[in-house]
Length: 56
Image (tube, rainbow, N blue to C red; front, side, top):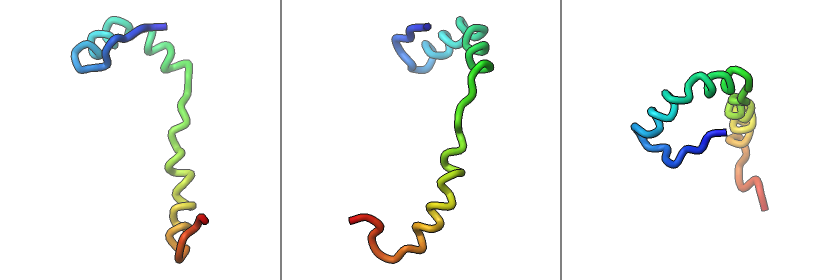
């Protein structure tokens, strides 16, 4: 695993450039669940139809 002292600007880009082949391998080997907002859309539509509080 890598240690990154700072995630600010040029230092972060330098880190990515220096370790890109390793980082790329990790990115390609893993997946990320990114559709949470899409799955909540129907709930938000339903909540907007409720008059008054939905919790006590």
